[in-house]
Image (cartoon, rainbow, N blue to C red; front, side, top):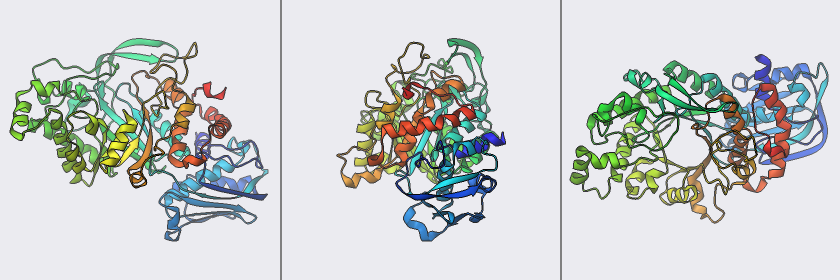
Length: 529
């Protein structure tokens, strides 16, 4: 286990010490010089400690790290790394910057050191100066664990991958129609009834599609969620929980039907297929609204970061149109569309979480659906996650002066929805998409339009690799689809657009595959051709 953790933290780099610098994501500026610095492997061992517990200052005879406000020009996550005849010097303004510098330093080490086969030899590091900082503040990975549950052990493996490639936000999609996966102590039926489905469609790489009965209860205890938060924090990753509301709420309504638009109607947890369903929260019922606040209240205590995601996507209004309480609110408040009930609900949730020192993340339907109250959404100060139509939604968010994170689903131009099949080759496992969501398309996608007015660029705050699990019920298939699309999005989040090169990225990924092999990750190989 210790060896695997070391391998994971190192990430791998070059075939030999004198090869060119191979760092992913590609740094902002790299200046190489003639010459190498020799260091014994026994000293390198002191560099392999997890960076979050290494004291600033002289780590070893030839490695010095300095964290100081004097380096503010490097930004919150930037760093400067120098290798010369005296050794290695790292400078940063924050601990996060130092962490990323050490990740890059480890990628300079020869593969043989990483794999423990160098013995007591000396290692030659190339003379280099790297000045580096990320393009975007938000560099995320979203994992849906509602449609199919993935254990904490696999969550941590995904977080390890994120850390290797300098990603800093894990968006944890904890609830949906197909299962409620977060323990809420005030409402225990959410994780008994809501975390179990009578049957569930499964899909893995070997068996293909099949069904199981009585799927669950599968959920994370509050202790497990706190453990994931701590594990990610040690790797400078913030965990953003998502509890989708007021739509995609079937699992919650199956547990507590009194909060639905039709309490006496049929309610059920969906069977892993995904989809859009009309069983939504009655946003005109004060008790139902309080239920939503109570859920957020417990999650705000578990997840310490400034944002919480409440979804807001694909919310049909049919339930509200049939509900007398909702119709009364529409009439009394002079609303022009039942859709505006959603914006009023989101505004109330926003006001509530602000009392907890947090702001909302939401999907783009909250501003793009016909009838949406965009002015009220501006007042929430929410961040918009743009998925479909991503380019239009992101531009609209920017025009409204609302921050946006780009996660495009569009397979023809390059999808950041990395759960989609990368190939239509014969024998490819069943999955989402037509097989034309290639790694190259993911890598070459341009998240910020070239013709965007300069004054709107500030609202494009990041990119996200998004993984939905309707078609993915096992960890091997999850990893197969994730690697190396996750790395492609990581580079989009860090590296300036002008420096990106598909050919060079592909070359660096080929050098990384032995690390994935050593750690036991499964990955697709179509991109290697």
